[in-house]
Image 1: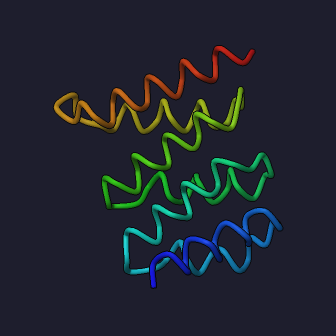
Image 2: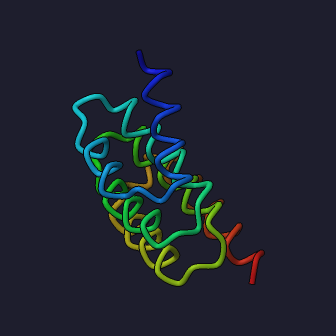
Image 3: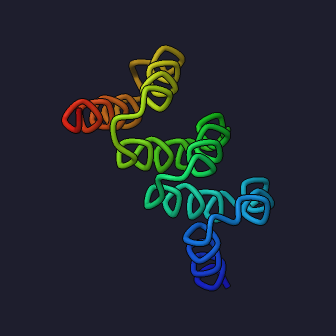
Length: 113
């Protein structure tokens, strides 16, 4: 069942059908929300960034982590960098996995300038 959602989400992202993708960002299943975040990392469309901005505030740590990774893939985007710095300021230092992923994403963005 999850695999079919993943494939459908990837197709919707590739077609920039953000209104249809939005329902997946509200799924009760964090694995589906993670799939949305992962798929958005392959797009440079503004809708992808907007979707990732929503998912960055997700209560599930795994969704946040996947969202950070996808933002890092998007390239040198001022807004994405600001979003990541915001999350970094809200993340406890004890959450080393997320803080490390944020630093990595920011470095990836700087490398594309």
